[in-house]
Amino acid sequence: MLTIEAPVEKTIELENNIHLLKILSPQIASTIKPGQFLNIRVSETYYPLLRRPFSVCDVLGDHIFIMFNVLGEGTKILAHKHKGETIDVLGPLGNGFKTDDEYDTAVIVAGGLGSAPFPYLTRKLKRHKKNIISFVGGKTESDVITYGMNNIFISTDDGSLGFKGTVVELLNRNINLFEQKKIKIFSCGPNAMLRALKEFCIKNNFECEASTECAMACGFGICQGCPIESTHNHEKYLLVCKDGPVFNVKDVVI
Amino acid sequence: MSTVDLSVSIGPLKLRNPVLLASGTVGYGNEMSEHIDLNKIGGIVTKSLSLKPRKGNPPQRIVETPAGMLNAIGLANVGVEVFLKEKIPFLKQFDVPLICNIAASTIEEYVECTRILTNEKSISAFEINVSCPNVKEGGLQFGNDISAVGKITAKVKAVTNKPVIIKLSPNVSYISDFAKAVKDEGGDAVSAINTLVGTSFNIFTRRPKIYNVTGGLSGPAIKPVALAKVLEINQKVKIPVIGIGGIMNWQDVIEFMIAGSSAIQLGTVNFINPKASEEILKGLEDYCIKYKIKKISELTGSYKI
Image 1: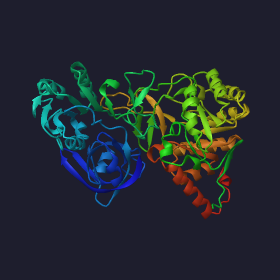
Image 2 (image 1 turned 45 degrees about the horizontal axis):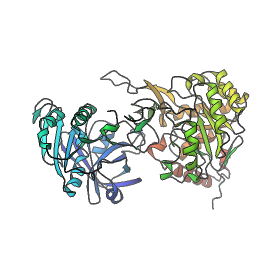
Image 3 (image 1 turned 90 degrees about the vertical axis):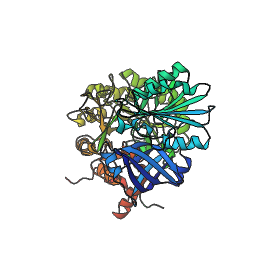
Image 4 (image 1 turned 90 degrees about the horizontal axis):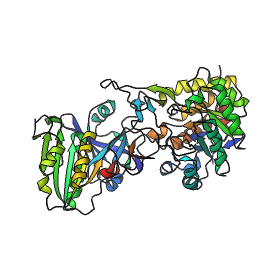
């Protein structure tokens, strides 16, 4: 875990308020794993005060990409970062996706901005010669983010793009794709999606990891601000920042 | 070699410098040791310990506010037994004064925790948390009651020879009345201030953003309040004060010392800049050299009003 002043290379607006920030950090780029995150201090002033956690979106050589949508003060500042500026980055943080277990097909399930960690995961999985099928959902067409993903099935709640319904319903309709295959599901998205997905995976006995989210301050375990209920020990919470953000869905109450 | 003497005393407790890391912002040391050399700081105050482990509050526990944050962690901690068995061995590797913060639901629990911990040689002092705003029993319920604060001070002092510091709540009319009760009952020092009670609502759902409804406000937003409380105690009661509240840099530390603090604690800043304590120490030394201050302790209560 490092705290560094990373030079900003550029900020790109992909579409529909979705931005990519490209920063230079050879040290972090060489060690960070898909699903891990960075806690970024967007300004040196006292507003916004806290760092913002972002999953690593992609890594290319010495460069790291972060994906975000402009929601509040912090992301507004981030969207206006230019080449020549630096940002204070803390990372890599947390535990990422486990990509080296026994499976032949990786199934990615993403909802909305939950697509953020998957360009990098897709890149790694391709390197490991895994088959990849991606299911991407959103409320409406403008929420669907397919950047950097492969072999994509799309759903929208309002039917404006792809299948009309939730991404988990779409997954269920295509369950025949997984016959005779050993699959592992990698997911990230809103809690309602992750809950439905967990139920689907338990019913069908599919291995599934999910990247979870929670408001946090430090990102490395000292503030205790980001509890998540464990399914194994009800006496103690796990922490999203340190024990996650990626969990096997069987291990946590979503 | 430095020509500046950064050492300070908090009653009987001698520290090599005035910079302590506040309870709940340093865990039990292990995470912070990846960022800073714990051997260099004045001391660390552990996460509040209770007799039995506490799970803490469900999420959401944290909300950002202008120049601050609200937290309602709910005193999640491993309990004294696990602390002694699993956390102390790690902390022992460092040459850093360890102040154990204790939280409890009853006066008896404060006493019992102190009694169990007092024989542990690596513990230098106790900080008694009578002011946590985020738990149902204990906490602020004691912090708002002068006679309870006095009673806790006396009973805890009776079971330990180590310095006892009482962490006071700012959510009272006159904090100096509480500091006086601590002094009268033999307490060695007070920490001021704990967080201010605050809340925040989601305007679309009309629900509180924090599960606990209210939380404790910390960060630079509370600094002027904290400084005024430190000054009030300094002017009314002869008891050492450890200043806490929104300290972000060395300039803030100097300000707190001028207002009457013998030492200070860094809290929220540790979440934002885990290296803050080291940077602050460098800044304090440079300030003292520049302004020919031989002993930093000369600053304590040196205001000109």
